Amino acid sequence: MFRTLLLLALMVFAASASAQQAEPLKVGTVNRPPFSMAADADPTGFSIDLWSGLAERMGRSSDFVIFDSFSDMLAAAETGQVDAAIANISITAERELTLDFSQPIFSAGLQVLIHDDGTGSTSVWKILLSKDILIAVGLAFGLLLGGGMLMWHFERGRQPYFDLAPREALFPAFWWALNLVVNGGFEERMPRSPAGRFFGVLLVISSLFIVSVFVAKITSVMTVEAINTSIGGLNDLYGKRVGTVERSTAADFLDRREMRYEGYGDPATMLTEFAEGELDALVYDAPILAYYANNEGDGTTRLAGPIFLRESYGIALPSGSDLAEEINQALLHMREDGSYDVIYRNWFGDADR
Image (cartoon, rainbow, N blue to C red; front, side, top):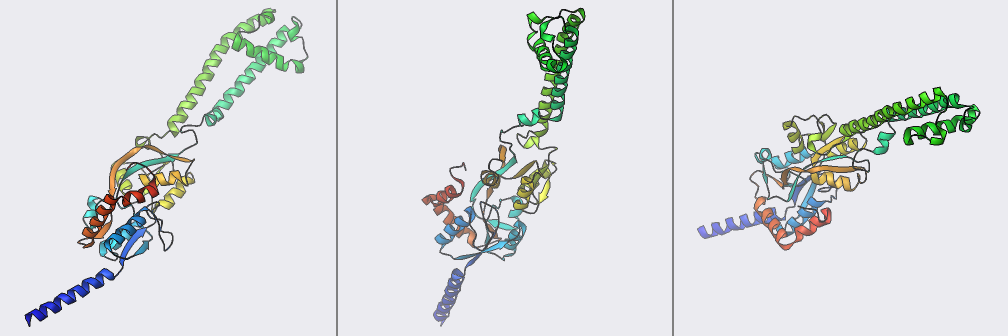
């Protein structure tokens, strides 16, 4: 009798376990290119391809549940509404309090994304065409023309070069003054009148001062422009318009650095604001920023500085989930047989890990 009851109990347990094994796993994700591009019911991306490989090795079927926000996805994993959640989920001490995680599936970190004018630095043409420089150039032309015409007035009738009508003398007078300032003038066209000689000496001496001021002005404008616009890394972000995703590891990092930033609900909105020029720089997950810089932002954006605050992504599971060991075993097999590397190269090329 006892054997019969034990056999029945084992059969019920086996049937129950078989039913659970056959039931598709619910896997939460959210739109985070290139890890998960979940704009429709058939998501793609690195994390999606990786999960498909894991599920195949576990012998499990699964259905993806697409969430509108990152926090909703994590909340669903925490409460058991989904069996697992996968995207670019950083493994942190705070999240470990309410969730379990698989072994790391990706090594990443934070990085800075800035606008790029095509030169990698402040545009020279932008500086040369600035208001201050144009005013300085205009004054220089005016002084040369005015000085040349004044010399024409003093020397007219004393040497053939200046013996021209006023309108015809405009360019020769300007050319004479320009050569006097740049080359010291023409020996054969040395002023002959006392007033012309005095003015010529005065023009040469004053030109040294004018040229020095002009060069100093250009240098000053270029230096100020470079200081105001150049962002070489994280330490250059103070005083700039910085954006990140709120409640992310990047936001926590900026809070600890006491750096002001604009928080957004999702990366898509943040990247749109950045593309429209509302932000000077972004601080966020390095792989996502790199993917944007190499695709939508190609030629107009670039990464500034090295990756910092290294972190690992993992698959989030409800606390105490029985799936952790299965997933870790499958992940190890994928790393050992090279299938993980194939998926990685498909989405990130030969980039360093």
